[in-house]
Structure formats: structure tokens, C-alpha cells
Image (cartoon, rainbow, N blue to C red; front, side):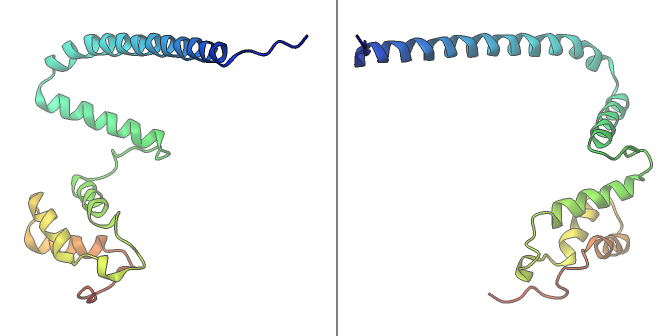
Length: 145
């Protein structure tokens, strides 16, 4: 004799399975929150003892670690502050531009103003903006829509 479960029994089984999954997820969340609290408890006193310069150096070291993990084994120690700023502005200005759509290509003054905002002199910012402008970028005014 073949016994088939009724719809109610199937729903009960499904509810039991979902309840077990929920309980497992709650346990995992609790573990993660305890780990987070432990990390916070460990690092907070260390960070609070650092002066601003040391904290900045520590964050730079963290950035270097991320760079090395991303495949740049040298990190950023070999880059000057100005070159790092150029990279930062190039990323901010050019990363989201549509290569094929010249009307999205910003004028150099966008990059220049960002560089001036970082403390660059006008002439140096103008040259920096030219340096970071990609070779594929449309020159001159953006096209009319």
C-alpha cells in the first residue's frame, strides 16, 4: 500500500524545514555579531591610543595590504602623494564614462577643479588633467544631443 502525505502533512514538513533553516541562520547571525563585538573590543583601545598621524599611516598600511591582495605586490609605497591623487581623480572622473558616447566625456576643467580642491596650483592641475585624460576620450566640447 502506497501512503501519500496529505497537503497538511506536506505543509507541516515544509514549516519544520523552514524553521530549522531560520534557527540555523539566527545562530550564524549570533556568531557573526559576537565576532564583530570581539573585533571591536580588540581594536577600539588600540585605535584610540593612536595619534592622527599614526592612524593615517595605519590606514595607508591597510590600503597597501588591499593593493597587494589585489595583485599589486609593491603596494603604494612607491607612489608619491601627487601620483596617488592623480589616480584618485582619474578614477572619480573617468571610471563611469561611456567610452563609445563622447557626450559623456567630461571636459578637463572637471578634473582640474578636483585637483585644485586637493591643493594643486592651477597650472599643475591643468597638466595633471591632461595626463589622466584617456587616449580614447573625445577632445573638445561634448557633442550636442
